[in-house]
Image (cartoon, helix red, strand yellow):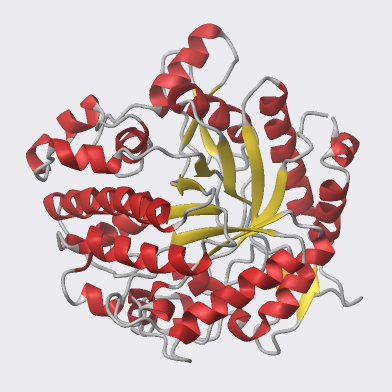
Length: 451
């Protein structure tokens, strides 16, 4: 089997999507509190006020992780639970919560993978200009330093930012918090400050943790793959995956090249030339910090023809998830392969999963056979990449729990564990038992799903 002995089988969550306790124990408001409390922004006016009540039920949830046999758990910290106003006074009760969670995980034999920012920006800092403010990278670095100093003796794996394509884009399309609709000049300024924040946070984490720590970054992995595995088609897909041909944030290189290569991509600079903020040489040096791994969130990909044409999604009869995302397992083969070729760094699949129509059956169980089939297909492709020498260190299923799915509210269920949002009862789905067996066999059980 291709999966190495130390492969990290995990699951992932994000603070605002599961914690609840939005204003308890000194926590300050975030832009997601602001946004979800605005009528009409979220499906059925749902909010993350309670979510999965993980803040009060973390011990139960860690117990379920242990039952699954998870080797790693990726979770984010709520910035405003630790620094209620984003800067200034530290809320010890917030830090204590994460300290207890980390201890609980380690006691259960589960390695914590901490994400510093998963979209819940402090409301008080938003009122000071948010990511548009040139001081914002320093605010984020100060927060990262506080966390690293407190948890760095026990947390080895760190990620700075989750999916900048999405949360920077939220400043333009208004679909997610903060709900702004800014022009390109402002959006690219936000994006540059975000990348500076990443670099300064890496510096802060490394300076606070005297022992060994591994630091990474988790953008969306936007995958293009060949319709046919010919040399010509593979080259066309690779070119498409790492090109910027139009003014769009939905690309890889604008967010990864400065981080891993120390420069913005030339084609992106040309496309965005009339909107660019001032980019100083020292900025790029700050952004381009040495990293230990690339985390990529990959859910699907797009096929590319030998001529370089991208085949649009939504073809008749194409399999789709409840989110209407295409089911393209090949993305977990070609994505890691292409990313490692370009950036020469170990890869973690930091998110992969599917939204499904899950409910409790008459027998009291949740039978999600489609999620099992989906995950088996994707993991087989990941195994193929590893067998060919791609250095993939771990896989984190999205998500551990059904949760608040941002603008979709509680409509979409991604979890291995079903959550009854009225009673907060947890039910292990069929996929959870299946995934537990995959973990226990280090992937050998996937052989049962060969075509």
